[in-house]
Length: 287
Image 1 (cartoon, rainbow, N blue to C red):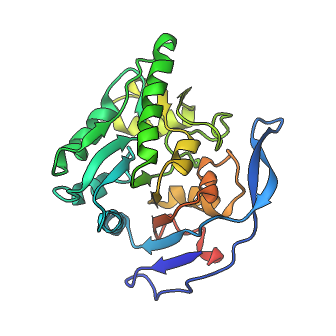
Image 2 (image 1 turned 90 degrees about the vertical axis):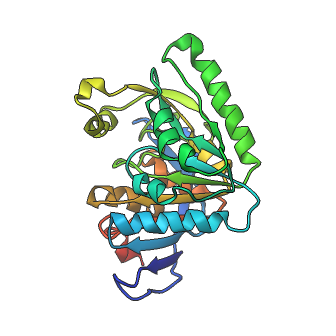
């Protein structure tokens, strides 16, 4: 695994170090409904880590990596992530990336257009050339669920054929997108699906609302399969001490839906990981 540390933190450290064998999921379910591991296999690609001082530097580095990915390509697709992790990154990209032909949203709340509007206002409207915006809408009703899933899956089928860089933040319990820890649908064979959000996710998202009662409880999300099988590159970012355990488990823990981000260890493409010093606090001893 390659590790890069910014100069204002510490000298560049060793580029390569050993990774113990990780375990690979074969869809068996344990009594506590956690996916368990049966086969062992090494990571297909070793992530490149950048450890930066703080959120400001994280945002700058993420913007730099996205711009670097786009260089020399006729057109790219940008897979966006909601939440606060990439908020400053999006601002730094305003007026740039003229070769982005499409922006694809990763997940959506049921019953409103909040995330769709957020990404349009933060990203799509700020990119030159009027890129295509791919999203879906689900009203939360069972009779419309499959139609919404099909629309989002069709978007992914198009994305799979394109030069797509997918941005990924991570939840405190290791969720990526709205793939929740411990959910049976959180496994590398499941694509787009709907779910009811966990209490912990609802509590975390309550900071964006006047009351926890206003937080949507259902969502439609890209599945682990979409994220690790239908993208060309992943840019993973995390900031803050409360993300440290999730960062550790994502890249050094067992591959299990106990930490959904751990399925990134099965990803065959390049992964760039940008974390600030606090979020990196539990992986420094792995270097």
